[in-house]
Amino acid sequence: MLQTTATASPQIKQLMTYLQRTWFNNTVWTVQQWSVHRLSSEDNDVEGWHRRFNGKAAHNHLHFYKIVPAFQQEAKTVSITQQLVSEQQLSRYQRDTYKQLQGRLTSLWDQYEEDSIRTPDFLRSVGHLYAPTVPQPETLPESDSEDSDYESD
Image 1 (cartoon, rainbow, N blue to C red):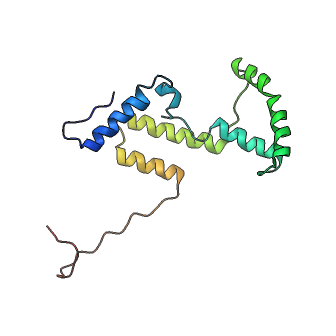
Image 2: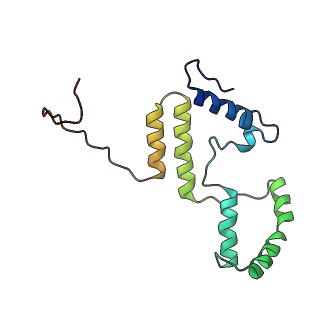
Image 3: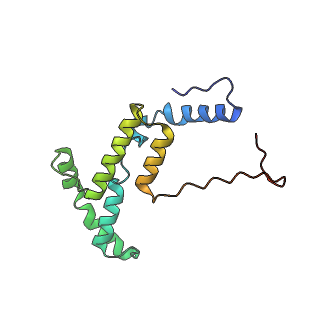
């Protein structure tokens, strides 16, 4: 699956061997079970459950004797939730903002995989989706002085 070139450093070859043995040829977990390639971080079900549970519990830092009954109450819903999910009767709620973000991200992935966008442009665009725009650093003015730290070609 992973290939290294003959000119790769020993550290790169060691890393590739580790990745191959530990992750790609793992007998416990398949790549599909642990890979997040093209999955949205916004629909992380565990994060959603945690946020919902905190809202139900009405506190972020519950004491042991208060959190145990809250977990017991939550556990009562597991079997019905599992049944609804298996019957595809339970739908996920996703905010419009995150739906739009996921749509833009999917579009960027499609462009990248079709080779219609270069890697630096893809990464820059993804960065703009998740973070505010950072201005490009200004180019240094040309200098003829001898005390410059840089040599010109």
